[in-house]
Image (cartoon, rainbow, N blue to C red; front, side, top):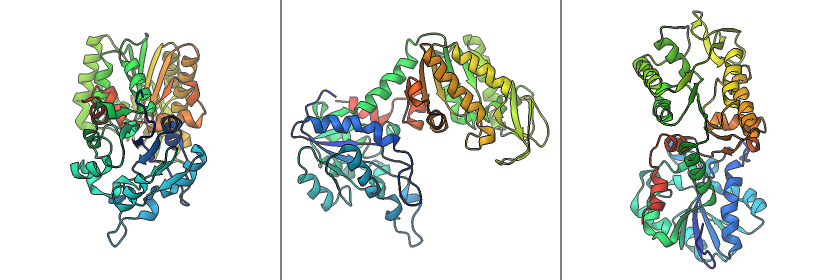
Length: 401
């Protein structure tokens, strides 16, 4: 951020879509903590800060009478925590474009912060409405996008608002800069060997990512339920495991492309299988291509975990997106944990390791390994699309003159 913020009001799009418990207390403040350096930098320069964010999907979960559940989705829940973290005055506007927002933004003094109400209380936000974006833009002198987690969406506050600022009055925040820098480093001229680890339930969700990996990976590790579509495509027996029957040809085509490109694809040798999709299910270990009828693979097995960890530890660049199993159930979390520990081990040996995606990030956080890998992305879908090679609208909007 090379702009001068002295005596300026910075309108910052942050991603404060944090998890709250039943009493509306923050259970994980990672996204808030990651945004602090940008906010503090502007305040230290003598500027003031206007924060805008969404929280949840309020228009999809309306009250019985059709009204918005403001008690559940209000950003006012975050004010106390923000004050504690920033150690400065944090005002709250009960709207993001109405009279209270305009009045409080105008009265803001250098060194102070104003948090606007949830932008998604307005349908115009997700529609990318120009008039709505113009009202948001009128609140600040400089626009700062520091919400990488929403950079893949062309919403009013993440993308459209940037149209109302010239190149000298819009910029990325520190978090966005780091996200772009680290993802670019992993994709372009990475130290070799490069191992890309992907998991999750569906091939359809990750096929574009897998095909992009062919451009720069030496090894591609595939875990999670999506692996069983590949095993079925190779005529294996997968029992009741989750598969996408309509993606068998896609899986076979990908394996052919990988062979042609000279990229090694590793599928799990064995699986931890369950007799039902439940935390208390009976389990057994079986070869991943010989899962008995009535059983389903819910995690990679010990042999697969050892093999995957060994490849990761020998790598100089590791990109990991997606769990190896049903991570939220302890009985099927071990494979994901072993991959997380292998990433930390590779980092210690000098590798560059980048972790993105909800369960992958949850694993490194749960194991207290977030600081033992090179970079943990705050953007699940955004990181996925960036790695797929797509130009994200929130990034493009800042770069355009």
